[in-house]
Structures are given as C-alpha cells and as structure tokens.
Image 1 (cartoon, rainbow, N blue to C red):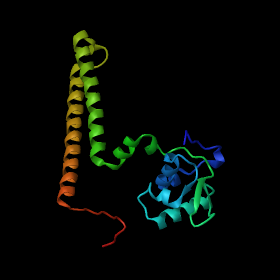
Image 2 (cartoon, rainbow, N blue to C red):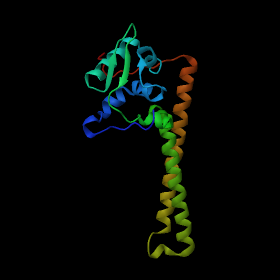
Image 3 (spheres, helix red, strand yellow):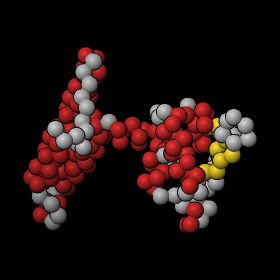
Image 4 (cartoon, rainbow, N blue to C red):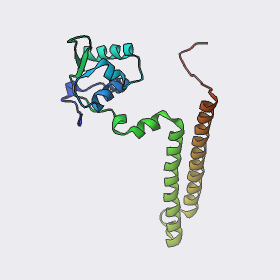
Length: 183
C-alpha cells in the first residue's frame, strides 16, 4: 500500500492500539492486495492463529478492519486507512528500540560527536584567544574529557551487553524477567 494516512481526526487510530497490533497492520501494508485471509495475516506476525483472530475481532469492533466469510476462509480488509507503523518505514528504529546494546552504542556515538565539537571549539578558542570573552579553554577541555570518557563508557557497556547476550544465546542460557510474578 502507498502512504496510508488517517482520513480524518475521527478515524485516527489510538497509537497504543496501533503499536499493539503493529504486525497485523504490517501485513496489510506489505501485501499487494487490500483483502487478506486470516492465514496470510498470521504469516506476518509472531502470534498464534487464535491470538490473531482475537485481535482482528477487536479491530473489527473498533471499526478499523472489516470482515466477511464467503466460504470457509474469512476475509479481512482495512476500513480506516492508517499510517504505516514507524518500524515498517524505518526498521532500524525497531532494532534499536529492542536492543539495549544498540541503544548504548548510539548514545556513545552521539557523545563522541559532542566530544569532537567540544574539542574543535577548544582548539579554536585557544588559537584565536577568545577565552577572555566567551569561554575558558580549560572549561572546554574538561568538558571534552568528560564527554569522551562518557562516550567510551557507553561504547564499552554496549559491547559488553552485546557480548553477554551472544554468550548466553551461544550457551543456551535463557533469562526470563516477568515483574508480575510474585515469588
């Protein structure tokens, strides 16, 4: 489907509902035809057929999808045009959102960029003698050192988290965390 946007404010979908049913909306966005069967939708999500049917019925009750069962297979289509989820448009965002190690590396890279800017500013201030007017060279150098050490910390921590995750996957160790368990 092309650029799918809500038709009006009344037809806009709740962002939480859109995120919760992202896989189902992804199926409609990626298929070449507008009407899909339940098995076609199930292929695009990491849910059981029963869970997909339950979510589709919920979307139907809210007027987001329409349905009809002309034979043995139920057909589904979008009643309200929706914008593709951001993770469909930019899959790297979903990858970064799901991986702590990538988040830490991105922070490290951003702090590295700030370090380059601060160090460049410190060199310019020292070269042209602006220290009396704007900023002291020592303060800029201290900020540069702080940013560079913080960037290195984030990069090393991101690498450590990625290495630990790889090691656990390689050894077959699975860590489950469920805050709802009261043990």
